[in-house]
Image (cartoon, rainbow, N blue to C red; front, side):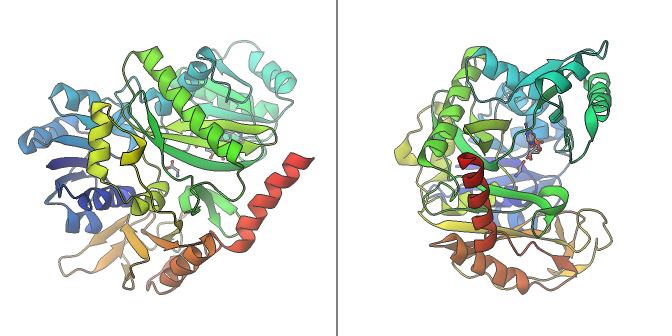
Length: 442
Ligand code: AMP
Ligand code: GLY
């Protein structure tokens, strides 16, 4: 069994680790954007190239002749790498370009759900022209002045601007929306939702979706959800695979939305969505709404859920590819997890610590470390990159137990780094529960 893993970052390390635990003992050939010390230990080969250089990727893919490939990040999928690999006869766990629009085009997703009767979106409108005052009227009269503006193409998480956070007033919103139309031809303007966000990722075959445990991410840089947005400072998941603030009906509805969306994609595109369908949801006053879809594993979400997987990940990938995936093949331990990212001290605003030495403690059995933006010298010395360095995952019977494991490890890291110490702590989890309870009893 040979698997080609096209990826980078801590998410890629977590995927490689899950593959390596398979009883099928796959040989892993990794193609990464930068050398990853974690993947290096697991993979037979690690090729460091630009993964958007499809000619080079295909060259390595054809030479290594894997049983299948997996793609980690969204950019290559959005640009058609799955299509190219499939055309070369390599089955690939990642959606084709037309299906990856679920992530690469916010307008496509909103219109898909509307057309196929999946009632999960906020009020929204897609604009393709900057003429007239329709945008102003929509924001003022339909949305009551609170809005979210979404760039209609991949922008590394920087395309969404929310009123009251990044933009103020109708004029600023309209100006940004027009900029989006000029740059990418389209913009989505939608209602600003209030509630608790969470991620529900499913293994998808086109006709079946099997869920992973739900996870809550923490995007703000600093304790108490303050500071700028980041790629995600950390995440937690609970032992019952739901989240403490969600009802049974909430988690079931999110699961149903993923299934309905996979079916809508099949009906719309005529091809099955094979890969990871990642629903970014928000629990609101009267139920569940969809914030966005991604077509890949989340980072950090993958770091929480993949270590809990006790069944064969290679068999799950084969199941996604041949359409024969069932619940009995997907087993996650009934444990809670907390992932805390170690980052350079100045992250995300300044990159001053780049190249500085960092060292990590030994990781016990009830924890994992996944390496992100970090480089390794010949002698094994580890040096900081500019972005998230490594994710520690604590595993326990409760979120609080998992939190203590992760925090204890983070505190032992040596170097000019920091982490968000409140992720998964009882006060912040309580705050989430209280916020939603109050919203729903108003
Ligand atoms: P995205 O790039 O689509 O993940 O959006 C980034 C962030 O913007 C999300 O995680 C939310 O916090 C926020 N966001 C996106 N859409 C909405 C919405 N309709 N209402 C409130 N917040 C939103
Ligand atoms: N956790 C956010 C993302 O992977 O996009």
